[in-house]
Amino acid sequence: MGRNPLVMIIDEDPIFRQELQAMLTPARLAVVADCGYGVEAASLAEELKPDLILASIEEPIARAIQTVEAVRGIRPNAPVIAYSSSTELPLVRQVMHAGARDLLVHPFKVGELLAAIEAVMRTVPSGGAAAQPQAAGTILTVFGAKGGIGKTTITTNIATAIARDTDNSVLVMDLDTRFGDVAIMLDIEPAVTVAEMAAQVATLDRATFKSALVEHSSGVFVLPSPKHPNDWRQVQAEDVKQLARFASRMFDYVILDTPGAFNDIVGAALEVATQVLVVTSVDMASIKDTSFILDVLESEGFPDERLFLTVNHPNGANTIRSADIERVLRKQVFWEIPHDSQMTMATQVGLPVVLARPKSRAASNLTGLAGKITGRDAPARESKGFLRRLIPAGSRN
Ligand SMILES: Nc1ncnc2c1ncn2[C@@H]1O[C@H](COP(=O)(O)OP(=O)(O)O)[C@@H](O)[C@H]1O
Ligand SMILES: [Mg+2]
Image (cartoon, rainbow, N blue to C red; front, side, top):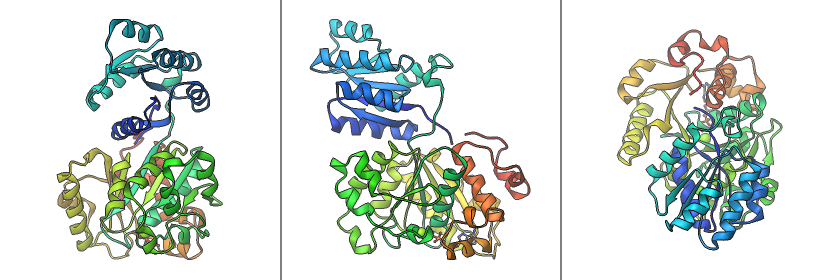
């Protein structure tokens, strides 16, 4: 998994800005800012330092061109890809003079957009703004077929490990529509929940959102799940998607915990994800359910490269080898978490094991997983034994 260039979208049409963002998500491009023409674009470029700018050129054309010029002045090394419904020569010339590197004809296909992005990013001078990759906008969904297989444990531990070990900001959103356990596992008191934030996502601003979040002592921000499963009834999956994307413009990592079930909220969590940890335990029932889920995702056309199979051993009894799991699921194991009774003990004191028992086997394993997610190397002692087979040494991607 890696770090992505930060993208800014300038377009007067907020709906198309959303659509464009959706096109970029699978390519793991993080949109840090989106706005219309004018001074806001320049100030956001200054504040958020995008590496790539996508700019719509529509009426009023002069204002669109001025905006591109202003942003270019602030981020001279960030290439601009413009798009317009007009291809008249005077407009094309104006756009090129404003410093755009490419001009797409609107509407365009995802493939055309990504090809244009790839082409301009390849030629960005090294040492320039865009050449410094930054972690941002990663939405990591922790997903699995069943309850009790360690999803929330993994969510809370990797979130706290990332916050502790890196400079990245981390938000956990609890999308478990049955038993939202994140607040309990982190021993925090939920105030505002996903339900209220999703309901007002259309008009949400950064300050309101930030003030609604609970900050855990580890530095992780949390948006808990509503207390009662009934409170999920009014929550629209579409709003949850928008909320996750909104959050990913403010946090380097947005980690979504999910229930052990398939529903529209889980669908939303999968759709917005840049990466999905597919968690399975090693009992036959869990593997069968995981196999079913992988088949469903495949038949829905879900991109396989976004799925990372994570084998957990919540129970001591372990009879199935990961090689057999790989064979049955026809998928490589990305990470394996050993059984460790310290995990449950940590849960009882309301702290993730990486904080409660940092020297335990579970803690160093989960720290390694967080490191792999953020592109840092796994700790050396974790590459011994069975993990060596699973983790390509020093892999960054
Ligand atoms: N590798 C492990 N070793 C020991 N206990 C574990 C492990 N993974 C999870 N557990 C325990 O299993 C229980 C269920 O985990 P949880 O994260 O709540 O699962 P889910 O979110 O999938 O329902 C918790 O008590 C947790 O401490
Ligand atoms: Mg859970």
